[in-house]
Image (cartoon, rainbow, N blue to C red; front, side, top):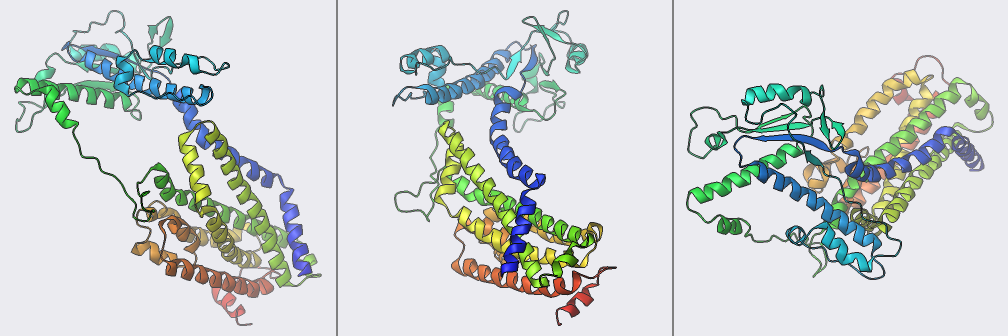
Length: 503
C-alpha cells in the first residue's frame, strides 16, 4: 500500500501543479457566476431599446397598442422598485407592493418613491428607472401615414434595413420594426362561421429581427383584446360584465402527497428541487468524462515516453494502476468539490443580495441529499469508467489509437444526456427503471431520479450492482493493464484482450 500512496501522491501533485488544473479550478466557478449574473445584466443593460413606427390608418388602434406597451413598462418599473425597496429600506421596514393597476392609477413611480422615501437608509442611492424596451418614433420626414400601404412599405424599407436612420432626441437610431394598420382593418376581422371574401392581410408587422417577437406578440394581444371588446358592444353585450366573467375562475392548488400534513402546497422551491438533479447529472457527466480523459492522456504520455518502464522497475503493475487511479481521482474530487463549494458560495452571496430564485436554489441544496448522493455516484462512476480508461490506455501507444475506442465510450455515455430532461417527468417509469439497472448508466439515471423518492429496491439494488460492476471493472482492468502496459506495436484485438482475462 505504501507504493500505491506514493504513486497517488505523485499523480496528484504533478497534476495539481499544471496550469490546466488551476484553470479548471477557477474557470468553472467563474462560469457559474456568469451563468447566474449575465442574464440579469443582459435583461437590464444588454438588450437595446427597440425603436418602432406605428402607422394607424384606421385611427383607432394606435392608443390601444401604446397603452399595452406602457403597461408592460410599468410592470418592469414596479418590479425594480420592489427590488430597490428590499435592498435599501432601513431596519425592519418593508414596503407592500401594490398591484399593477393600483400602481398605475395612484401615480406610478413618483408616488411610490415619495411613500418609501422617509424609510430609506441614509446612504441609499437614488432609484434609477428602467429604460423602455420599446420606444415609438414618428414617421420619417416626408412619409405620409395615409399613403397606400405598398408605397408606405417601400418608403420604410431602407430604415428597416439599416440603410437610413431616424433622429430621436438628437440621436440617430435604427428602426427595429414598423407596424402598419390599414384603413379597412375592421373588414379584415376573422369571425367564426364567416368565410371572408378574400384572404385578409390584417396588420402588417415589418422587422428584420425574426428572433425577437416580443413586440409583435404585445401588438397582437393588445389588438385582439380590443377587437373582442368591440364585438361585445356590436352584439349588445356588456363588455365590462363579460371581462369580469372572463376573469372569474376556480383556483387549482398543486399539492404534493409526499409532504407532511399541512405543508402539502407546492411552491417554486419544490419545482426547483424536482429539476435540480438534472443539473447535477450534467456536472457528473462533465466531471467523469474530463477526469477520465485526463487519466487516459497521462497513461499514454508516460507509456510513449518510456516512463512507465522506469516506474515498473520499482512497483508492480497493480500498484501502479491503483496509484494512478487514486491520484487522478483525488484531483477530480478536488476540482468537483471546489466547483460545488463555489456554487454554494455564489448562491449564498446572491441570496444576501435579495435574489429570490437563488435563495430557493440554496435552500434545495441545503435541505436535500443532492450533494451526498452526487459524491457517492461520482466516486463509483469514476472508478468504473476509470477502470475502462486504464485498460484502454494500457494497450494504446498514442492518443490517435485511443480515439477510436473513446468514440465507442462516448456514444455509450451520451444516452444519459439524451434522457436528462425526460427522466424527471417520469422518474419511476419503465425507461428510468430499466436504465437504472444498466451499470454504465446507473450513476447518471439514479442521480436524476434521486429527488423523486425512487423505491428502496431500486436505490439499494442499483447501488450494490454499481459497486460490484466497479469492482469487476477494476479486476478486469488489472488483468489487461498488467499485460498491455509494456506492450508495443498495434493494439490488441478484443478477443485477445478477453484471453488475457483468463491468465
